[in-house]
Amino acid sequence: MDMEFELVEAIKRIQERDNRFHEDAYRHVLRSLEGIYVYTRQFRHVSAKELAAAVCLCARGMYGPMAFTFLGDWGIQSTDDIGAIVFHLIDEGILSKQEEERPEDFENLFGLKEVLEDPYFRNNLP
Image 1 (cartoon, rainbow, N blue to C red):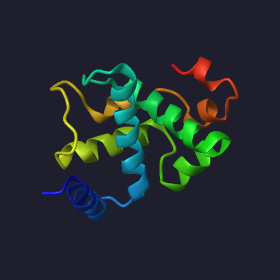
Image 2 (image 1 turned 135 degrees about the horizontal axis):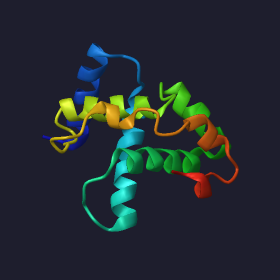
Image 3 (image 1 turned 180 degrees about the vertical axis):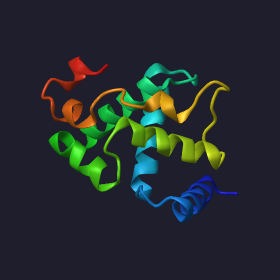
Image 4 (image 1 turned 90 degrees about the vertical axis):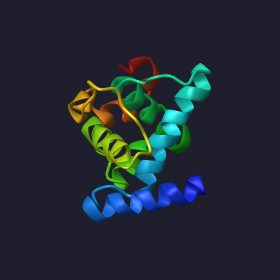
Protein backbone atom coordinates (compact mmCIF):
# COMPACT_ATOMS: atom_id res chain seq x y z
CA MET A 1 0.00 0.00 0.00
CA ASP A 2 1.16 3.54 -0.72
CA MET A 3 2.76 5.13 2.37
CA GLU A 4 1.18 8.54 1.72
CA PHE A 5 -2.25 6.93 1.48
CA GLU A 6 -1.59 5.03 4.73
CA LEU A 7 -0.61 8.25 6.48
CA VAL A 8 -3.68 10.13 5.22
CA GLU A 9 -5.95 7.31 6.36
CA ALA A 10 -4.22 7.09 9.76
CA ILE A 11 -4.63 10.83 10.31
CA LYS A 12 -8.32 10.60 9.36
CA ARG A 13 -8.81 7.83 11.94
CA ILE A 14 -6.99 9.86 14.58
CA GLN A 15 -9.07 12.96 13.85
CA GLU A 16 -12.28 10.95 14.18
CA ARG A 17 -11.23 10.18 17.78
CA ASP A 18 -9.52 13.47 18.61
CA ASN A 19 -9.80 16.48 16.33
CA ARG A 20 -7.57 18.87 18.30
CA PHE A 21 -4.82 18.83 15.68
CA HIS A 22 -4.80 19.72 11.98
CA GLU A 23 -3.37 17.24 9.49
CA ASP A 24 -0.41 19.60 9.02
CA ALA A 25 0.49 19.18 12.71
CA TYR A 26 1.03 15.45 12.19
CA ARG A 27 2.99 16.06 9.01
CA HIS A 28 5.16 18.67 10.72
CA VAL A 29 6.06 16.32 13.59
CA LEU A 30 6.98 13.59 11.09
CA ARG A 31 8.98 16.06 8.98
CA SER A 32 10.84 17.17 12.13
CA LEU A 33 11.65 13.57 13.03
CA GLU A 34 12.92 12.96 9.51
CA GLY A 35 15.07 16.09 9.87
CA ILE A 36 16.77 14.56 12.91
CA TYR A 37 17.61 11.43 10.92
CA VAL A 38 18.96 13.46 8.00
CA TYR A 39 20.98 15.77 10.27
CA THR A 40 22.50 12.97 12.37
CA ARG A 41 22.73 10.53 9.45
CA GLN A 42 21.46 7.85 11.81
CA PHE A 43 18.18 6.06 12.18
CA ARG A 44 18.00 5.91 15.96
CA HIS A 45 15.76 6.43 18.94
CA VAL A 46 14.87 10.08 19.51
CA SER A 47 14.01 11.41 22.97
CA ALA A 48 10.96 13.54 23.68
CA LYS A 49 13.17 16.57 24.29
CA GLU A 50 15.08 16.06 21.02
CA LEU A 51 11.89 15.75 19.02
CA ALA A 52 10.27 18.78 20.65
CA ALA A 53 13.40 20.83 19.89
CA ALA A 54 13.38 19.55 16.29
CA VAL A 55 9.74 20.58 15.91
CA CYS A 56 10.80 24.11 16.90
CA LEU A 57 13.85 24.15 14.62
CA CYS A 58 11.85 22.89 11.66
CA ALA A 59 9.02 25.37 12.26
CA ARG A 60 11.41 28.28 12.67
CA GLY A 61 13.32 27.24 9.54
CA MET A 62 10.14 27.04 7.49
CA TYR A 63 8.08 29.90 8.92
CA GLY A 64 10.59 32.22 10.58
CA PRO A 65 9.13 34.52 13.23
CA MET A 66 5.62 33.26 12.37
CA ALA A 67 6.48 29.71 13.51
CA PHE A 68 4.43 29.80 16.70
CA THR A 69 1.45 31.19 14.80
CA PHE A 70 1.58 28.34 12.27
CA LEU A 71 1.94 25.69 14.97
CA GLY A 72 -0.88 27.29 16.94
CA ASP A 73 -3.16 27.29 13.91
CA TRP A 74 -2.57 23.54 13.69
CA GLY A 75 -3.35 23.05 17.39
CA ILE A 76 0.21 22.83 18.71
CA GLN A 77 0.55 25.18 21.68
CA SER A 78 2.91 23.23 23.93
CA THR A 79 5.32 20.33 24.11
CA ASP A 80 2.43 18.37 25.65
CA ASP A 81 0.63 18.73 22.30
CA ILE A 82 3.67 17.38 20.47
CA GLY A 83 3.53 14.35 22.77
CA ALA A 84 -0.17 13.84 22.07
CA ILE A 85 0.54 13.89 18.33
CA VAL A 86 3.43 11.45 18.69
CA PHE A 87 1.33 9.01 20.69
CA HIS A 88 -1.57 9.28 18.24
CA LEU A 89 0.89 8.27 15.51
CA ILE A 90 2.22 5.44 17.70
CA ASP A 91 -1.33 4.17 18.29
CA GLU A 92 -1.82 4.05 14.51
CA GLY A 93 1.45 2.19 13.93
CA ILE A 94 3.09 5.08 12.07
CA LEU A 95 5.72 5.54 14.80
CA SER A 96 7.06 3.18 17.44
CA LYS A 97 8.19 3.69 21.00
CA GLN A 98 10.35 2.10 23.62
CA GLU A 99 8.64 0.24 26.45
CA GLU A 100 9.20 2.95 29.07
CA GLU A 101 8.08 5.89 26.93
CA ARG A 102 4.81 7.65 27.67
CA PRO A 103 3.04 10.90 26.72
CA GLU A 104 4.11 12.49 30.01
CA ASP A 105 7.69 12.54 28.71
CA PHE A 106 6.65 15.58 26.65
CA GLU A 107 5.00 17.50 29.49
CA ASN A 108 6.27 21.04 30.06
CA LEU A 109 9.68 20.49 28.47
CA PHE A 110 9.86 24.18 27.58
CA GLY A 111 7.57 26.96 26.47
CA LEU A 112 7.06 26.78 22.71
CA LYS A 113 6.04 30.42 22.44
CA GLU A 114 9.07 31.62 24.39
CA VAL A 115 11.48 29.47 22.40
CA LEU A 116 9.99 30.23 18.99
CA GLU A 117 9.71 33.96 19.56
CA ASP A 118 13.24 34.27 20.98
CA PRO A 119 15.51 35.86 18.33
CA TYR A 120 18.39 33.73 19.68
CA PHE A 121 16.31 30.57 19.91
CA ARG A 122 18.90 28.21 18.40
CA ASN A 123 21.22 29.03 21.27
CA ASN A 124 18.44 28.71 23.84
CA LEU A 125 16.90 25.38 22.90
CA PRO A 126 16.97 22.94 25.80
